[in-house]
Image (cartoon, rainbow, N blue to C red):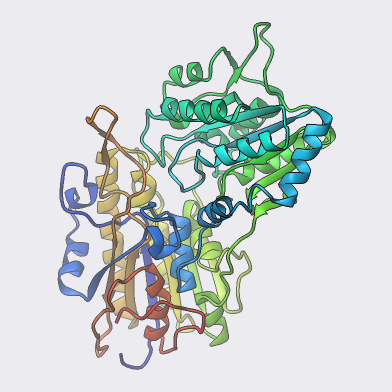
Amino acid sequence: MSEGTPGILLVLDGWGHAPHDDGNAISAAATPVLDRLLSTCPTVLVEASGTAVGLLPDTVGNSEIGHMVIGSGRPVPYDSVLVDQQIRSGGLRTNPLLGKALGEVASSGTALHLIGLSSDGAIHAHVDHLRELLETAVELTVGQVWIHAITDGRDVSDGTAGTYLGRIEKHAAEAGVGRVASVVGRGYALDKSGDLDLTRQAGLLIADGVGAPVARPQEAVDASARGDEWVEPGVVVDDDGEPLGAVRAGDAVLFTNFRSDRIQQLADFLVEHLADRDVEVLSLAQYDTRADIPPLVGRAETGGGLADELARHGLRSVRVAENEKFEHVTYYVNGRDATARAGEEHVRIAADERPDYRARPEMNLDEVVEAVAGAARRPDVDLVVANLANIDVVGHTGDFAATVLATEHTDRAVDRILATAAETGRWVLLVGDHGNAERMLKPGADGVPRPYGGHTTNPVPAVLVPVDGQTVGDAPENPSLADIAPTVLRLLGRPAGEVMTGRPLW
């Protein structure tokens, strides 16, 4: 590779690769620019899921781990992996924090509340982790365990919430303790947009039993007109119509999600709302909450990544993304660290109102492109890191036609960014962070394909658009997202960081 030059790292969120079929919104879209790049530029398919990025085998990738590995330059053992390791070793069952909390509950005759996403998508949580927690509660003679189920429909197929509720009830029956006390969709409980009314509804359901009364958890799911993601708050009541599992003084609360970002708004609300009830609150993994919530399982070390190397070499970067993906190009690329390094600037593109992604699949792409172009034209900026969110965000709606349009908008945005790169003498490295829109149909339990808006285990493209005079070598074997940071550093004329195990792709 020739002497380093400034460039643009462009993450096309949800840009996965798969053969064309009826569920592939990316191949169905008219994308002349991306098609040309894939056929004429140095291109490689990189792994973005499973063990290649620090996840459990065959686990779908996601935006958070994708950006974190892109930035870290190495696979990072994800929180789900660390939790599973603790379960397999017996360390979770003997965790002193958990033992102390459950011991106090057992001795006082109060209750344990388990709150988390109820699916096996393994992106935010895994329903089978409840089994270990329930069995631990039995060992420590806890008599009451209330489960507050958050239905999914996004990381797993819509229409499966009832199956997962059945799995929870099976775990509880086998353990001999536990009962579902409330049900609510992740659209309420895991809001990330800052809509505190949604969070409040979920929080009051869990804490105080405020919701539509149901005799069985399945009734709440059956009543949903908007699918599993938007199951309205439903509280299981006794024969007198009283909530079974409201949080009482002296109870303990354990959040069972292992990923922080979508649970933390609810966690902060509940900690504040329960402040006068002498309730101990724990989390399965570490959260980035305002409240101090002790985790049962810590985090992997992520220092020494791209952000630290840029700062060490005195290179200036500008990070650009819409509100939905802003943390990904800042906090996650920086190794789950919200601190901007020296020479690092952030540009957040915020919508004026709550977006309707189906109606506006272009989102705020024009503003993103303008911000990227503005940063690229500055001679003091060595690297622009930007996220084009459309393919992923619209893909999550499960709306195939809207996702095709989102992909086409992305293609035109890439064309404009490439024009600016050519004008300013910058290379462009395009990469997906995980698969999504290349598989928007998934067979249901009956084998009939249904709309699917979740992530995949497919590889993602990495494409280099070099500047004139840049020479390109052969990509290493078995490439993954861990190779992106070393590639960026080589393009900038700098060596990979000492802790990076990834290799430059070209």
